[in-house]
Image (cartoon, rainbow, N blue to C red; front, side, top):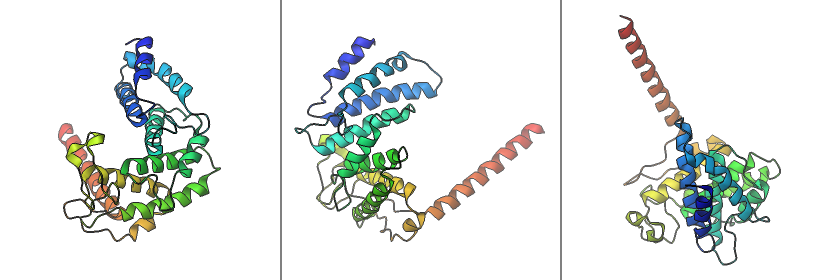
Length: 257
């Protein structure tokens, strides 16, 4: 693929009506380059990334910092799109362009209930953008912390009695996301929503005192996994490390003899 081809491909993506889909394709394209980079290879895709970054910065909205921002598109879809593109910059250790504008606008999208649109994907996008970008500026740190307190309450409220998490309290159709096997009726959890809700909780936990999570009354797991206290995770990790250490010492001893 040459420069002209990759630019033509970027142009043909559905930025105007489905920016979240367009951004997802860019993320997957860049991920291939990131994977190869970490494997020690230098494929052609890596040489094309500077052109991709330059093109992305040309179409970024200067006021909001968002990608795909338009009055004709769902704000949640532009939030998801912006998060996907920001992840591309993070993947290659680059600073997110107009990061303060992105952070400010993402925080402004949060509703008083604590969500960023209500769906599992939009909420995780808003939380991850807020937590990650707040490390780059101290101007909105207190605003971000207040937002995460509200997000925590919202996320916990999305957990069903089964222990899994809902995409939104009203349920949803997954087919439009291509996740036909993750269809969930109203009030039912599914594995994809549970994954992203738990990831959102993990990001909130990165900036909030762990003691808050220690006091959460997690619901019974049922058909889904339940929350595990950080102390239990730490204990399990220490046990595994000790076991790995013993195994390695035994292998070295065997080789030495």
